[in-house]
Length: 142
Image (tube, one colour):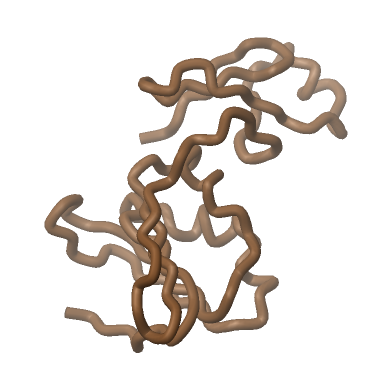
């Protein structure tokens, strides 16, 4: 078992689909943080077979709920004083801006590059988001 030192204070983003950690790392802009960040790729998981994990040392102010849009299996563990003080399953936000991009070439966001990509949750059970401008359905890569 690979062991990366324990966290005194921070956040562990767990149950990331194997190979998905870098997308989340880039999306959250973790390279800009002045703290230790550990990415564990292809860790063994009883539930998933393989998974990625990101450990972030210290308090972070990023809204992590939007990660549910990128990967619905992610869980967040908040660590304080070497203890898990909170385990969160991510709730899907009703509206997301600039998290996912509209792929419709006729959408106004393709023409007006400065427009934000905004998606509304239209089917919570099926986790379907649609573009606010053109109704294009967002399809997640599997």
